[in-house]
Image (cartoon, rainbow, N blue to C red):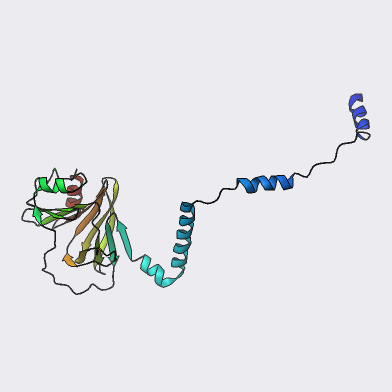
Length: 227
């Protein structure tokens, strides 16, 4: 230890320091003033998480949540038993019209298929445009705000696949029911129709649905041709 260090240590005993200031109260006050209040969105998300957690804690509620899924305007419900319905009733696609007229009466860009060409029939129901192609009775629906539901029984398979880089649903196996959601806002279909294999996908803001006697690969190929 050098002489300078020894001298400094000796002076330390005779030097008086002012009393230390208690900073804790002022720090707590500043933190309290700067603490942001949670916004409405944060509170809504928090409540949603709590509600979902409570629902999953109750077996019946958890079962109900896991028995349906949605994609765009479509809602798929899984039921233990399909309701009784007439099997030959045609699906209500709305009044028949022309493609040019349908384009004028909806507010979105109407998609057409470069693979299938012009449809045999064009129908309009609300903002839903329906195409009917050839003798195969291939039907393609597109809409932005018309909601529909499907009920799938134990023999119906619903597979998640990818179309145009987005999620899609391929429904096959036993026949399932299709119906439009009531305008009153209920989650039950207004009217049910028995249908076969179907593909549901999204293209930008539109929900698309294809139904017909085609394979999964053919359905995907057709879906990709709509632009």
